[in-house]
Image 1 (spheres, rainbow, N blue to C red):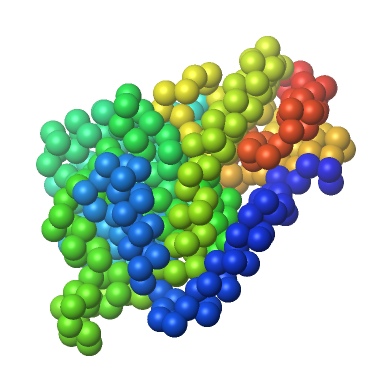
Image 2: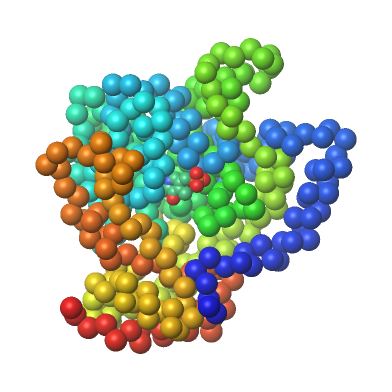
Length: 374
Ligand SMILES: *Cc1c(COP(=O)(O)O)cnc(C)c1O
């Protein structure tokens, strides 16, 4: 394949820097490999970047969600409203703290959770709502904020895919009582391993997350466990590599957005032929993934492969249809838009080091799709 969906050369330009960091950390007299001064510097850098009072680096985006829910004291007897379409951690983090995920349907075009579906899912047992930004579109956070306020529930912003996105002047991750980021390879600020972060202005919440991250210790007295915590610590190598990568993030995001603008311009005329690009625009957008909706999705995927273009299906099934979460689906409840999205969505390569010629080739391949309405 000429243009794989997951590029093998994401960090090729940083190989020397990475080897340097490995050498420096490995030979440093402190021999500190987790939660050291590089982690603290990285947290400071993200605080400066986001304007958040507290940033706590942890082992993954999934554990960031779990730490936030635990720090909010959400557990057995509580419900958390989550999107019916998205990645597993949206539901599994809720289940892992002993609470019940309640699924809300998504918008048929943008695939982000619908505020009125979230509102409908709120009951007396709801402790939090947890919208997620999807692919390239941020959720309707002003409405989510208003909903959370009106119903007096916590707002957890799953901004794992949208670090660097801005909606109405407010960065992704800064809309809720807490937000999260993920640094797994494929995310916009991906790295050479695992990592995540919790972002919050709530000092008390931040303090609790910090303790939960390292087995309930407060960072002063060792082996005094105030809380039943987790091992969700952060790696020093990753911290320094991310510090090295942070200044380039805005430029990479801008390149992604530029590619997306071009795709959308090329694909807008395809709507009559059953291929729909995401909405145009930059506000509330962050191009982690560029997802089309195609009536004949599998045929389009096969067609692109004949042209050497890899693509990927995020996600082939709604969360409540998954064997692990089916028991939380309420009888008689349906998620028709999530079902439709699962059947139609297809993500194209949009990584920032694609050349203009490669981007054009990908767009040509999509436009060549014989398509036509079913
Ligand atoms: C990737 C992702 C996560 C989890 O992040 P990990 O670092 O892979 O654990 C959570 N929510 C969403 C929406 C994601 O896309």
